[in-house]
Length: 287
Image (cartoon, rainbow, N blue to C red; front, side, top):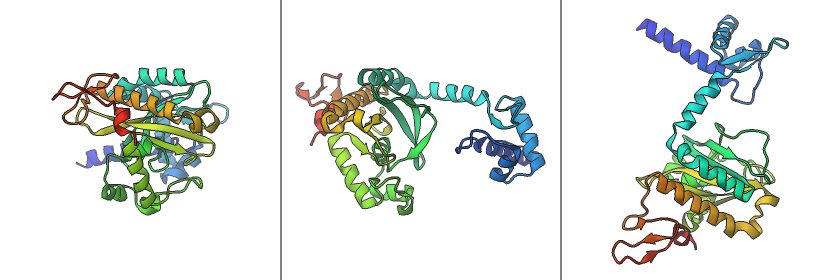
């Protein structure tokens, strides 16, 4: 038992060292890792040496600074490639981004944050960094609003206490009353919008993705600079595109539509009672 506890502690310490490189610190000295983890200098040095030998970190021979190595990339690639939502969305999101010239992003919820599974950037929305693996707030993003639709008001308040609704810009929703009203609108029209709520100069349109049980398990968005997204003239085009993409992905995950409706493709649903065409997902959710 004592040996197991010691091994567990060693694993936890090693992971705490790796975690220091995730929170905005790409390159660190040993002293930096000591300060961020609270571990002793000798323990930290020993852990870094072991992690370096396993290619989880690497050390610049000139500066002596440590950074993440290649092993985490291998693990991350295996993890996302085996995620069912990632497998179902990757090709479609890439095609969506290329067709619209904007960013296409897919995320799932992990606790009180959204987690990016993938992103592609179109010619009108270039980025210098990869979003995959990053976490963002639920209340300040279009993707997050879609993911919050899976919770009722009480569950949202338990997950996101009022003080956690941080205002990133003057446009951010910072109260549950406003968030409730916003989500009611999202639920009714079938898509969410975010205009400069997380960062100035950016906006997006997002739609929820469901699995075979009908539960919202992910969301997909189209994003980019305000001038490229141009919601004042492109809202209908982009909302239709993102809802159709979300529908297609949901079908691939086994979603068969609301109870009593059988979805047969982008042409529409078929009512199993009378065989007449039923509205598409976009038409069902329009005001």
